[in-house]
Length: 304
Image (cartoon, rainbow, N blue to C red; front, top):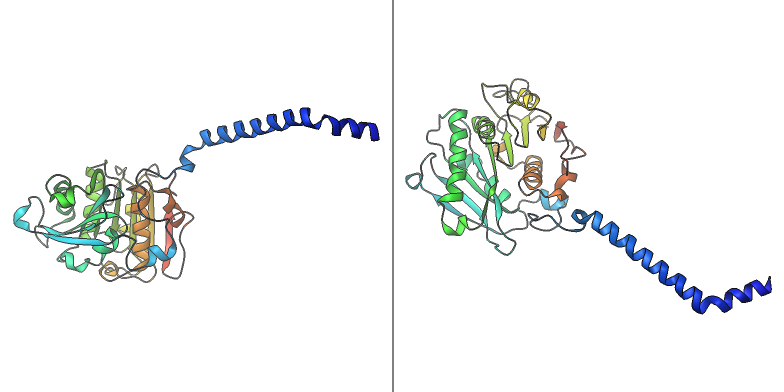
């Protein structure tokens, strides 16, 4: 026993060193192979903007980006009725995605204006549009949303245009504006996201939509009842498309017209996940969010 022990001790300076060297090399190779196999997990996405998200950040009245705004006269545009643009003042993190939002029937942008700076402060350029007529129907509002996006990308001021990545665009809207966002998503599959809010539309089948779409409805909506609007819209979108349905507990048709934290949190998370392809926001969408303000949530669960 003692001799074997002595032999081992005596051999350590040479064979032990070789063993340690081989072990270090093996560990190094394994580590390198693992790093090469999972580069996406190690690096941030190319469109990630802002700090790691938290519940507190998403639930706050403003996100991490300071914003500015500018008005757009109806006389200086075509295809829609002008509006207000909100954008991050920061230019150090690259360009941002953009979203056009339409108000509902008989309403003006002022009815949703709280949403402009809130969404922009999370790293988006937002245009809240005025429609050509307050009586415009959903199909017209859809065309106007697309015209507003085209204006942002092609004809807006250099200050605004230089901040926009024209390949990362989205639409949203309330009531007939929400119905219009479905029209826009159906007409332009290159859009990255759509968020209809209490949407109203006589068309119930949206099986052609490929754009990731989150529909947010109100349980107590008596104008665009979820049973005849939001739910059929959601069900008709194919499961091959990313989609989600958020129903707000006891909410009326007009829930988007006042500050609504649950709506804004889910809306921003959806836009960040699909316009920015920022997978840090998946955890706010899947598993499903819950709480007293949520009556129901359905989803296909976003996949990385």
